[in-house]
Structure formats: C-alpha cells, structure tokens
Length: 172
Image 1: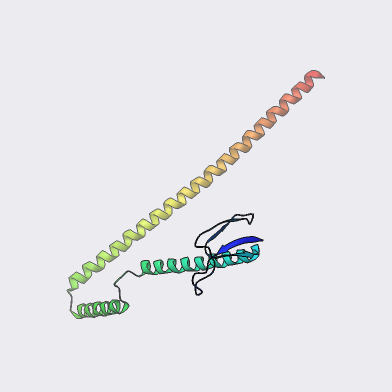
Image 2: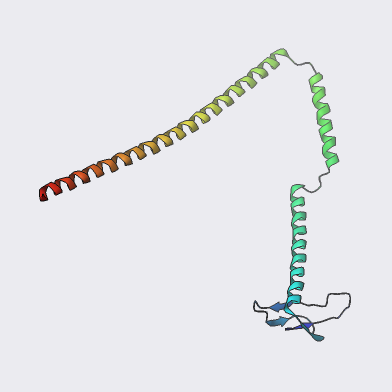
C-alpha cells in the first residue's frame, strides 16, 4: 500500500498531481496543494502513470509529425500556384517549339549533345574499369598471400620433420 497525496481544486481536472515513486514503490514526493490523502494500491498508480506516459508520447509524436510536415512543405507554397507556373512554362515551351529554328543551330546542338553523351559514357567506362581493376588486384593479393602462407607452413613443417628425424637417428 502507498499513501498518495492528491488535490482536487476543480472537479473537471484530473485528481492526481505529479507524484514521484522510487523503483521499490515507496512514496517520495507530491507537488501541488494538498487537500486529502488516499490509500491506493501500487498497481493502480502504475497504471495511471503508464497511461500518462502514453498520452505524453502521443503528444510528442504529433508535434514531430507537424515539424516534419512543415520541413517537407516550405511555407507560402500553394500547390495550385505550382500547377499554374508549370502550365505557363509548358505553354512558353510550346511557343518556342513552334518558332522555326536555324538548321545549323540544330545540328550544332545535336553534335554537342552527342559529344557530351560520348564523354559521359567514356567516364562511366573508365570508372567501371578502374573499379574492376581494383577488385581484381585485391583478389590477386589475397590469393598470393594465402599461397605464401601455405608454402611457408609446408616448408616449416618439412624442416621440423627433417630435424626430428636427424635427432632420432643421432640417438639410435
């Protein structure tokens, strides 16, 4: 049993004020004005605190989601405004396409695009080849090291056997 001090200044508010209970379940302190004393079981008090913690967690989660939504959607942005801007951009692009362009300009633009694609592809190939070479070299090094270790072990074992045999022969 635990003595729990509570205050009920207003019947609409919750009866319990903040209560500190240590891990062994002993009553430590109460904040708020004291009106009367209740004797309650520890389980009931734990249940009340569990519910309070759950409520606090829910409130914090709501606050976090609000913050996230504010970060994702910057202020003063209206989705309709974006649509209007996109529509005007599309119209201006169509108007630009309808204007006849010089053939020479088109050809030079196409050539530039092709050369850009070629350079991009070359860079990709170079990076891929470099990565492949690095991986191959790493594998080769590992294999070489393993082979060296095995050979060293074999040689050591052979030398040990020869020494043992010679010692045996000497003592026979």
